[in-house]
Every structure is written in C-alpha cells, then in structure tokens.
Length: 306
Ligand code: NAP
Image 1 (cartoon, rainbow, N blue to C red):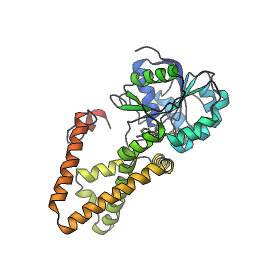
Image 2: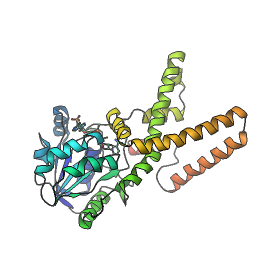
Image 3: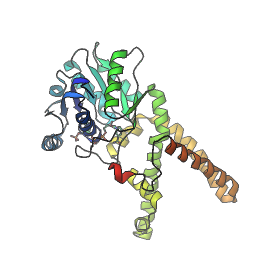
C-alpha cells in the first residue's frame, strides 16, 4: 500500500478512531495522523500509547493542513464539531465521518462546511462493545463493509480517494444514499440493539426475583444479548435519537411479527412456529455463506479480539 493522504486528522479518539489509526499505520496510508479528543484524560492516554503521530489540544490545531478530516465522535456531536473546525479546514480537503446514522449527520454537518471542501460521509460496519482510545485494533475493519454516502454532485476524485483509503484499512466499500443506509441499519443493527437492551432489562427485573440465576445459568443467546447491551450508552442514545423514523418503522414491523408468534404459541400452532424458524435459519446460513460471520460456536470472536 502507498500513501493516500499526506495528513489525516481524527477528531474523537475512541474505538473507531484508534482502529483507523492502527490500521492506517499498518497500511502506510498516511504520512502523518493528528488526533484530538475533548477530554484531557483521553488525550493523555493517546499520548501514552502512541495513538496518533501528534495529539493536539484543540480540534482546530488537529485539522490544520489535513487532507482528510475524519469525525469520530458520537452522532449527536458531529454538527457542533463541524461548526468549530470549518473556518480552519484546508481548501480542497475531504471531511468524512464514521457515524452510525447518516441522514441526520449530513443535515448537521453539511451546512457548516465551506465551499471547496469535499464532504463524503461514511460508516464502517465494524465495531465491538468496547469504547475509548485503548479499545481499537488494526484488524477491526478487515473484510468488513464500509458504506460511503456521497451527496449528489460530490467530487468523484474525492470519493474515489476515500474509497481507496477505506480499502487500505481492510474494508470492502459500497455507496448508498443516506435514507437507504438508515433503513438498512435500522434492520441490521439499530433495532437488534434495542431488543438486546430490552431483553437484558427484562432479565434484570427477573433477576431480582430469582437472585443470580439469570446470570449463573445464562445460555449463549442471553450472553450475546448482554454483550450487545454493554455497548456505549452515549453512542446508542444518539443513534436512536437520530434514526428515529427508520427505527420506529422497523420496531412496528417487529411488534407485528412478535404478536403473530405469540399467538402461534398461545393456540399451539407448531407448524407456524416450525416454518418461521426454518425461514430464519436459512437467513443465518446466508450470512455465513456471504462471509459476514463464522459458524464457530463463539462466532470466531476469540480470534479477532472482539
Ligand atoms: P468512543 O469509543 O466512545 O469514542 C468517542 C470519542 O468521541 C471520544 O474520544 C470522546 O472524547 C469523543 N466525544 C464524545 N462526546 C463528544 C462531544 N460531545 N464532543 C466532542 N467529542 C466527543 O466511540 P466510538 O465507538 O469510537 O464511536 C465513534 C463514532 O463511530 C460514533 O458516531 C458511532 O456511531 C460510530 N460507530 C461506532 C461503532 C461501534 O461499534 N462502536 C461502529 C461503527 C461506527 P472523550 O474520550 O474525551 O470523552
């Protein structure tokens, strides 16, 4: 791999930014990477572990002369960060982000950016339940999708360069419009997270009745829910507040299906339950065949460090 951007600036230094840094370093994709996090504690940690070539005390300092500025903060903070850095962006640079919601981020960021700056939002479909500057690792994006949502009329050169950068980070890259992205992610990520949060909440209520039995005897299904439900509260609060419409749409459909299954259980309709579970099992096989997960009982997590 060769250098794609001379200087990359990472604003926010958590799981995603730190993984971008280590992966960018692995591929030799940038000559220099600067970084900024709002808290002194995170900046100190970043300096201690060598996260970024330069850790700056302000976002303004970090974006100076940067050819790519990557916003790696929670979705709800993107607009305010864009406003702060916009007067200091290098003309002709690309601004991107890694937010889990796209339409709201485009609405929040685009109005602040000056002409001559290319805005190409993105979203790597890779993560773990851990957060903070020490949670990142170089292989996080390997063989994972990264979705770019370039606005109509975006400069093809700027989009192609960002695509090459994400490919260098290990990702497969696709393009989508923001609304479609938000609907797809509501199905594949956002609603499942809400269900996991709810299920762990239900078990917690039950746990109060049955002491520690829920944890002691928790089978793999529930343990997976608890892992998902351990995800960062700020990030996920912002996801739901900013992908409201699509999440509510999918939750409505989910509730209808749940009622149908509930009824099948009540009336003893084994055929309906069997057919439903057969259909869902085929979907799981499809995911494995598409290389998006492994059939290993632990989902291969011990190998990837997730
Ligand atoms: P993280 O580990 O919690 O790190 C977030 C970073 O943003 C921290 O450096 C934090 O600074 C900073 N920050 C938080 N609130 C801020 C604010 N109001 N203003 C300025 N900076 C702020 O988060 P992450 O998991 O890397 O997520 C970052 C982005 O990636 C989010 O938009 C998320 O939706 C997206 N994403 C996450 C995942 C995932 O699985 N985690 C996957 C794909 C995309 P301090 O440390 O100083 O508080």
